[in-house]
Amino acid sequence: MGALYIKNDETADLAREVAELLHVTKTAAVHDALLHRRDALMAERGRTIHERLDAWRAAHPLGEATGREADKAFYDSLNDEDGG
Image (tube, rainbow, N blue to C red):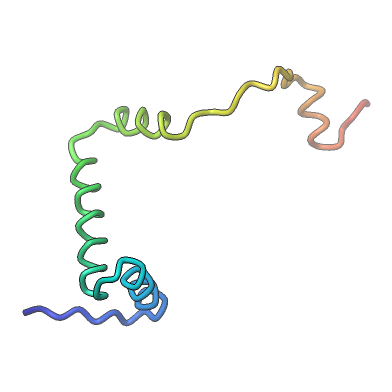
């Protein structure tokens, strides 16, 4: 049987908090978290950077267009250069 000692207090507190939320032991909470992380990493394996970026873009769509024009006057206004 292996042993895992968490030396970081913040990490140990997080494990305790998650265990309490799940009503399981800290060991079970850490095991569950590691299984989920491993599965996520394995799912990413073999995917090209383009596939990963496409998935990221689908999960994080851009906002709606404002209709404003980003012209020289706009960029000048960002640097308090209104006028000349």
